[in-house]
Image 1 (cartoon, rainbow, N blue to C red):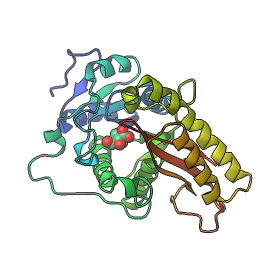
Image 2: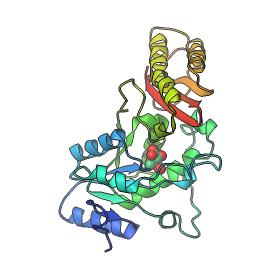
Image 3: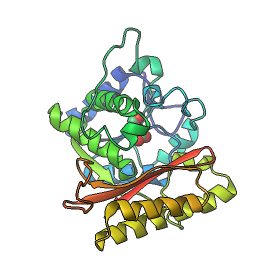
Length: 288
Ligand code: PAF
């Protein structure tokens, strides 16, 4: 076994074999295991997911892998923040093992399989980023099958991603419990994100008002406003803040992400937004 215990004050597995060897030892000792998949650049939002795992399981594996297949060619794969040493320092006393494989370990020569999820992957992010969810579904399926944890935790900030992952696990009978961790917010309500570091000072100020508009739009819909009217007004307000483009502001069925044809929410609903300011694309969501 070649677990790296010297680089950081937390062990790091670089290969699936090493990850599995550690997990096997823990299983032999009767311990339960939780997985937090991440792309690194860890912030308090990620750490809260690790804490959630540690409330429920004896050991927490945190994977750090910037997954190339979920980025389109024009997206920020090369620029995506990679801060492994700082991430490892943040996990001391919180996580038990980092799994940080190389792209070749995850996608070896000849790799040919894609997990694709119909329905819930289709709208919203699926329309804006047509190859994104296949990349996410494939890597998350691999991470879960490599670790075989009792639970795996994902942030609710990527609400649609969470629904896609729940679908995979249900459809493929993968024996793992999927949990969502609540969105952590900055003091002005901006949802924490690894991409917030791209924001300039003026963009950061405008970004802090996005959640207020989303919350007010949700409240209008909950009070009986017609969904397309409330969201159109919300989109105008987001543009007026200085956002360059609003990809969507929509109220959807919270589980299936289906559209409400009557213009009123007839099942538990979620409001979801994606909007671009400068070079930064922000997403957020909340219950309606
Ligand atoms: O949410 C993320 O950070 C990523 O999409 C995930 C789940 C780690 C898969 O690469």
